[in-house]
Length: 354
Image 1 (cartoon, rainbow, N blue to C red):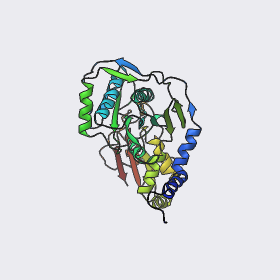
Image 2: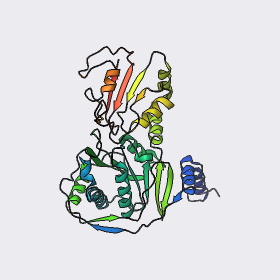
Image 3: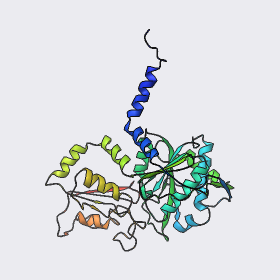
Image 4: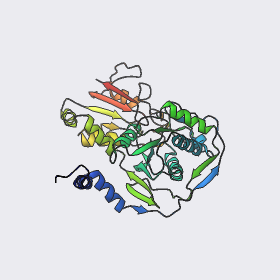
């Protein structure tokens, strides 16, 4: 007789497709090469008390860096987020969480703290960009497309957007949901409720700090930390959204030139990889493309304020033959056809044309 829908051949075909899926094969290879970390997953319960002023805005919670570094300020907020997620029925236990940021001062330390709290709250796997870097748009792309797609239940982004970074400047953190977008008001309200009543923090203090400088997979017990190229998922998604062939042809035209200013924020690796390497843009067209903890600091033309506007994007604006009022000026150099810039976490942009 012919096979029914419940016969064995169908699952076998599905299994065969899964084995052939390059994403599955890549994940299996990574796990086979994983580095086992020594340490402990024992959960410590840290006594704490509510801290005033932990209500996140539309772009998360932002304060001076030193405030976040004091006591359990960061710990309180992160644990309150987990408490809110549990209250809303989010599948935290056994789930996957993205943790990265815009590269500002104290990002690496904050990421290590979040990983330890995440494991204590039952998270199975943590995804981090190399050097702890992921732009805000890239976090969304990772949540929606990495692996089989929509694997993480959410992600923490350590960023204060365009605000200056540094020990005397600003730090911030925000949470994105399983759809890759910012936490809705219902969830942030729940977070605020828990920040006002928190009494303990769960933390795996025995989990060692992870080397975020190189790609790799690390395990401790049954928990996994994967450090991956921060550009790859965002690039793959952009290639599905835009015609890279036509853009590459435009870049190859002798009458086209451009400048892209990352203002020493997180966008630098994305700009150089995508615009120069993949699309063939002239090397050096991407300026200030090396992420720095202080976004260039006081000595930079933009004084570390990575905000792409006529006031702060001084080098971009001048390169495009304009002054701070948007008026044309003579720079003595050819003006590129196209100019653009991004802020610290790359979710705010400015575009200029000749």
